[in-house]
Length: 199
Image (cartoon, rainbow, N blue to C red; front, top):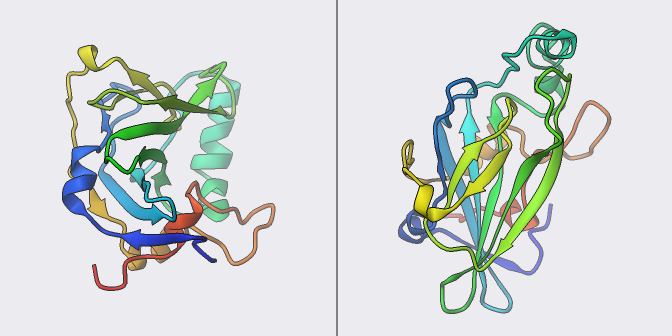
């Protein structure tokens, strides 16, 4: 559970300055909250892990695979909640250099998305020196993202980042003591494993 060689920080103003905007989607909704944790590396870089938080997720499309996903994974048996925990919590990471400019943004896109399939393949992506604002569209029912050009960003659905408190971190079971087939860690960075003690 060690956070590695990082110093946990909380800076709401800095988090707000670089916060991603997730534009609403007619079928896939919009985040209910935007949680964050932040840390400084030994080299002085600032790492901000933003977590778009959705109360739920479900494949709304037609097709056998989509129907089975609703019955087995997100509804009915709710295997997702057993494996990961309640709600749907994604990850977008912004890394700032020592001058406090964005050096990298990382997120997950959908790989060869087929809305009628049971599941969605995750495709990690990173962009170096990304220009502000960071605006995303949702490209899949399980809330994978595509980064939009700043000029096309309408900045609808912007949320104020909230510090990801330890009580919420435990409530949503971000890190399991041991991982197994039906007990998996949620998407996070190692530096998030330590919270600011007096936020």
